[in-house]
Image (cartoon, rainbow, N blue to C red):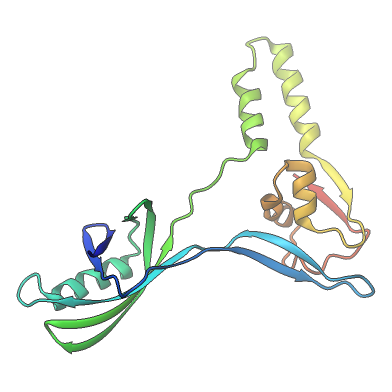
Length: 203
């Protein structure tokens, strides 16, 4: 019995002899500090890819060549498409679509999809929204909320030996993946080379 992968309106039968490869992981950047053990900075989740190989067959208006052309068009447009394979359901873009044309009615292919990652709302953002939504109509209450926010926005810390941006993000935001926010606020292009004692703004 054949399984199927569905990408948008395209249906790909997967024979029992073939397999669907799902590649998922995290990006870890090695931080080398002279005289100290190597550390790894968590750069967040890496892209999740889904790939398999198969055969398109058939002739005519909806034959193999027409199907391949339609898949290639969606790839070049970068269209976000719904994807399903058994219990796995997500949204993807077509990253690559390689074709080996034996005949125009028989095309062997390799396809790779990349999952469309939705932005994750952090606890820090949620807390800020709750303060805004929960504010009263009183002018004094509004001023108090405004002062609290401005105080929290203007924190300055000195980075310690071996400390990373992801560690700071974990301390101040509760989420190590928010390290890019700190890097952007301080104009840091290379997070691996931050000297100890440097003052950083925590936005």
